[in-house]
Picture 1 (cartoon, protein in one colour):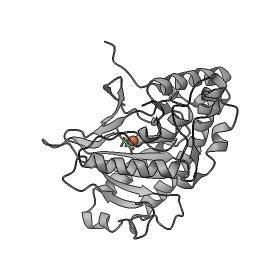
Picture 2 (tube, protein in one colour):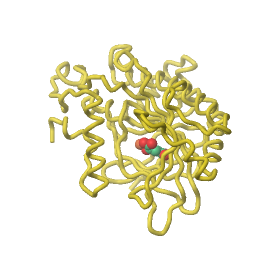
Picture 3 (tube, rainbow, N blue to C red):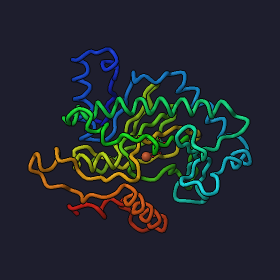
Picture 4 (cartoon, helix red, strand yellow):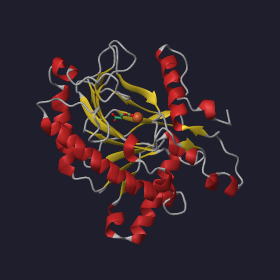
Length: 314
Ligand SMILES: O=C(O)CCC(=O)C(=O)O
Ligand SMILES: [Fe+2]
């Protein structure tokens, strides 16, 4: 059986105004989102030296003494765990992460004597948000939506989140970095180092998302799956920790705000005579359901990512 490979899409036609190239890239993206919900992009506009500097600086932070890292613990009263977090050990998964909200948020916590890390994450945040806007417009066109439909819907950038992640090498007993999950939000971008370990589920099989220098991984979030009435998939993915090496990565969640009402766009329901697969819901209600389900998962009960609560088809 042929090995399944997550497609790599060259975005340069969109910067060069090459219409034929744009059309081909859109077709590839449309196919990738319908089939896998995952693809990689190259020539996306993010400076390559920023990408490698960011990976280097975050690795140095995670490899610093634990007291230094704990000094960056989330502030009391923070609505979101901005700052340094680690999963309790032993746990069913293992990763350490540093969460950043919008640059300028009073809840952001960075190591005081690593100003370069703050700066590089600020730059990364800005670049990811820029690519998010570009990609959102490309996705809207791939989906055949009227211009600016997605941008008009998702026009508040205050809920975007950047996370630096660090995975220790696998041990004899444990090799899961992040368990199988689907991402919240609209679009997730991942910048991974060269080590590997990210996998996406397709037809019950786990497919590696092989690192490619200079590439960013794009992953469809649950909200886009609902808005497109399942035309685009938000797939399960996980990180398996490598043997003998640590791994580091960044994820950027191009999110929607909690007050947003989410329901399938009419373009994918009544305009094409299809029944909606989901009830409408406020995004914050979905996040609450997801949290409850995560607690169930931690205690070994089944997890359904909170979405089945709003599903009309299961
Ligand atoms: O570290 C990675 O490659 C991906 C992490 C991930 O899936 C997430 O942050 O949601
Ligand atoms: Fe994820």
